Length: 115
Length: 115
Picture 1 (cartoon, rainbow over the protein chains, first blue to last red):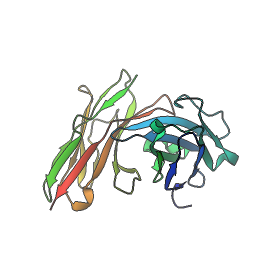
Picture 2 (picture 1 turned 60 degrees about the vertical axis):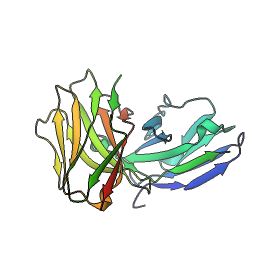
Picture 3 (picture 1 turned 120 degrees about the horizontal axis):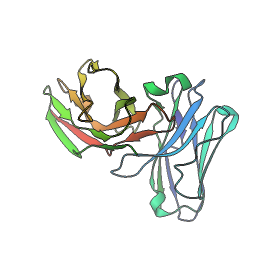
Picture 4 (picture 1 turned 180 degrees about the vertical axis):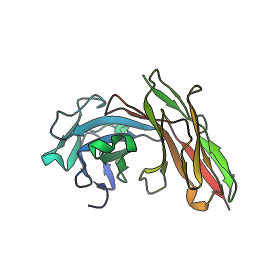
């Protein structure tokens, strides 16, 4: 596609439920990042995928968070047993490997609200 | 570890005037990249301007320019002839040359443009 697409745009869920957030990067972009943006905060790195390499999961805040990337394209971020502190905007970004130092292309994010 | 600090949570500017947003960072590295991103209400992060640390010349993109002071570890953004469409959150970001997953963001500055 022309840009990074994220779905859903907004998600309200009950505490304790699982949620899946989807990111469809720009075609040909091998690098994919997930960030979390809490209210009034900067972006917090969660996970990084690069091609077929093992993902860098060092930013995931707990074992309730996981992510996968199928076929080197679409990625899904899953949060299990959601808690109220998980409420945030989850942003996905992608880039060509050779363009990493030129900045990333971001999606519009998913606003997750846990009630 | 690298940290990015934006000391101005909010700024305001009159339309057509000039405003400067501050950013400082902490690093022991000599090679890195600095970015300013704009996040309008649509939530999509848009790259405004980029600076390579090895370049002494300040980057400029139309009405946007930076004042990069490497020794002081300062990277401020100047917006000239401010327009209503410039109203947004602005994030300063630091990216290391040496780690593909490491782009660190400041907490952001909310810019209001008054007509």
